[in-house]
Image 1 (cartoon, helix red, strand yellow):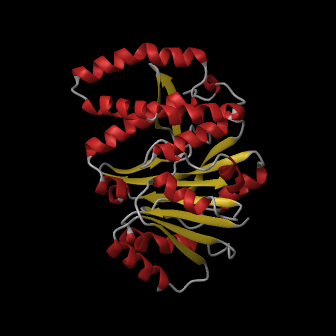
Image 2 (tube, one colour):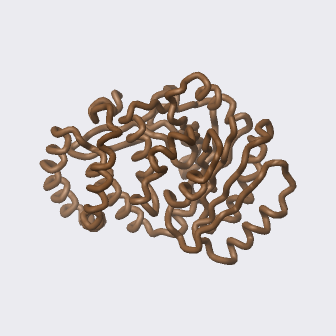
Length: 311
């Protein structure tokens, strides 16, 4: 299987110089593979540093460096590389992710054994303040009118979504859904959205704990370039967008609007201005959300209640 590693980058030349060698090592048995680094409007100095590093590498794997002149966001950056790819598998890695040796072998086996497999998520050894946290498998529930998600145990193969920071997706299926929905730019929920749509359309996704990456969250571009309040506001906005765009079961939609006053009151009591900012931003995107919702109707083979985690 031809493999295309897609690495979105925003002012992360130092991160890529640290993590790209392990990516190259992981591809040594896949000689026809390619790496595409999509620079998402980095500052000129950082972009030049990235160009110099890539051009100075001596390796057999082809590395393409493409660029947006202005920063657009995670979905757009990944799509720029992925939608133009002629590979069979897309390996999507954040710039702060370093794969362990042999991480691709179990994933390729998964794809060979299941033609209905949309994508596979990796075991993410996340370096955080409290130490190493095993992430990569997620569970999701419908709770008080919203989709809520959290980390799942790493000893199971089912997952609610494939993390955009470390996942492998069948390219033709990624393209058939139009890639990550850019309505979620600059970040968050785009990976949950695509995974949910794929599962609702009848495809399988899987968590593979034999495919291991190290994820240095504290070094990533989001926390470096966005304030905590901005991140929270964008997260709220995209949580609303996800529900309005994807949830079609009548009972669930009804419960969303029934519980909305409850959530608004809670936000007032905890002085959570970001909640109302996120809601306002989502309302402003309603025409785009409705267009997408209507377009997706023909994809749906499963009911929403079938897709939520059982644990």
